[in-house]
Amino acid sequence: MRVPLPAGRTLLAVAVLAMAGFGLGRAIRQEADPAADLQVRTRLLMGTVVEIKVPASDGRIDERAVQAALDEMSRVERVFSPSKPGGGPLTPEERSEVEAVIEAGRRLAAETDGAFDLRIRDWIDLWGFDSDPRVPGEAEMQRVAAARRRRDPEGPLTEFTFGAVAKGYAVDRAVAVLESRGVTRALVNAGGEVGAIGDGWTVGVRHPRDPGALLERVRLAEGRAIATSGDYENFFVADGRRYHHLLVPATGLPATGARSVSVMASRCAEADAWATALFVLGPERALAAAARHPELDVMIVDADGRVTRSARWNAGVPEGRP
Image 1 (spheres, one colour):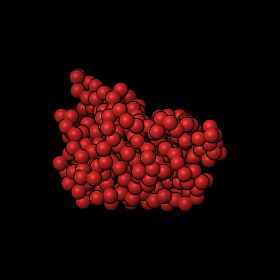
Image 2 (image 1 turned 30 degrees about the vertical axis):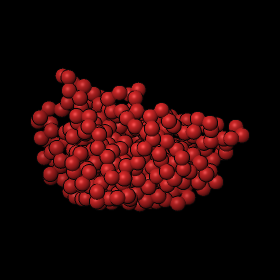
Image 3 (image 1 turned 120 degrees about the vertical axis):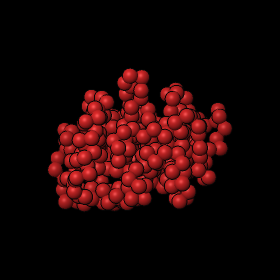
Image 4 (image 1 turned 60 degrees about the vertical axis):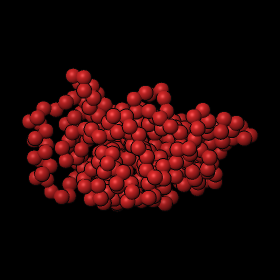
């Protein structure tokens, strides 16, 4: 999936945004050379604490550039979620961006046999992942499934959710703003979706069952980004069973094959979308899809906790080192 990166101040805009999994539990931690003087600027956005880290050897950074990048992410949030204060109708330019993202989503849906689907507002609302989560009854599930079979191929924007790509896109936009202002080294993290400027950054992928532990560390090279989808990001437990927001579009049920999927790609929005799609596909089909896309590096933790990596996944950072 390629999500267009508009030039200048053009934003990817949407009419609604599913906040399910929108930073509810950080999937990735980031680290750097401990000798560097890292300055960190944060802002609460998209249900998480967004961070921008910039080295400052003399104790100073370009504050205007960093604040401009955070403002860009704030603006992405506003147009992605117009039901919030500050949101509003889509401009023609914004609608064009929405249509481009929807089309990219359709291409990814076709390639993954429907595992990726932006048009699942009905399932998200039924489970209450944006409000009061609950296990829906069988009759409710059948009613939504029947309505989905009858619906037109095209639908209103209110039927779409963009939580599988919006955080990654916000990271891409922040990186673009920083680069346009001459920043040559920075790390941008939106609740686990991470983009980097400059080489040498190390990020730690969170253990899906131990919030205080890292599964492993990886080097994030120049021009690469990483995103993780996990069953721990937005979930609830009912009658001893875990239910999470990563739903199979065809059935409306939580995908059961994996605990987490991490993807490295050239853009964070791309990594974000593929992580969701591969999680829903399950480990075997996900690895087959990764083999067809050598531009993606993939790590999968299956339902039993086994870890599998694609051929190009770059771990190689010894425990205890940054």
